[in-house]
Amino acid sequence: MASLQGKTLFITGASRGIGLAIALRAARDGANVAIAAKSSVPNPKLPGTIHTAAAEVDAAGGKGLAIKCDIREEDEVKAAVAATVEAFGGIDILVNNASAIWLAGALDTPMKRFDLMQQVNARGSFLCAQACLPHLLKSANPHILTLAPPPSLDPKWWAPHTGYTLAKMGMSFVTLGLAGEFGLRGVAVNALWPRTIVATDALNMIPGVDVPRCRKPEIVADAAHAVLVRPAQGFHGQFLIDEEVLREAGVTDFAPYAVDPSKPLLPDLFLD
Image (tube, rainbow, N blue to C red; front, side):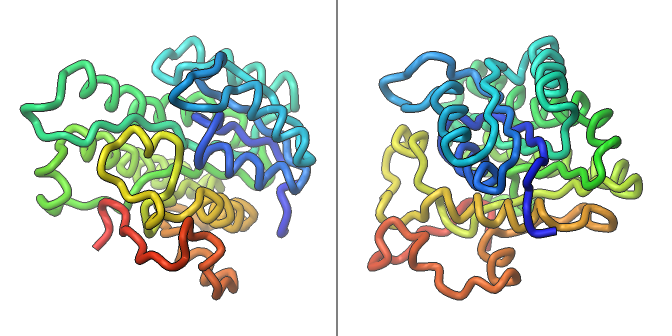
């Protein structure tokens, strides 16, 4: 099975960036994609809305469904999942892509930011999985793929930004737990993380990142596609790296993924 044709994906935070890239890659196969995100109206700092994303999915050959959803809100998540099932008849794949970031030390992290990261990242991923799992368990090849790093207790990843690291590792541990609980029931619960920093619109809001030394979101999208077409049975609890997934799939030339192939790449956080 090398295609997602006819499959239904529920992707959080898919109005732009990596989430949108994953949606468009699936759309080229003819997939149904629920775009679950907060961005229903244009933001001058962050281009893209659920409506523009759904239109791009349609134009790419899939069927897009724009759903305004704050994954911190249980009722909104349940309603979004119900709307997806009503539109497409079920859910085959959940992609936990939505994430909040604040790269600062403890004394420079407002509790409002700390709470936002915990609510969106770990709690949001758990909530979306909880809502989607009854439908995933009915799918012929169910996947949950979360954009989260390999778990690490190395202080070098915690000291500079404890709040953010806790939130991202929270997503990793949710993946670990759900894989243990549902992997034996045939659900492929895994995580995916980029080898290098990925150039997204949100990255422009973080000062000091040299965008030409980043890769494009398409590398994560292509790796996600390679993961999601795999048989789910017996495939769970893996913390996958985009570059390694693509090498295993036969990709040897990574230059097209670079924003500027002449520049050395910036490694992503949490990877040695």
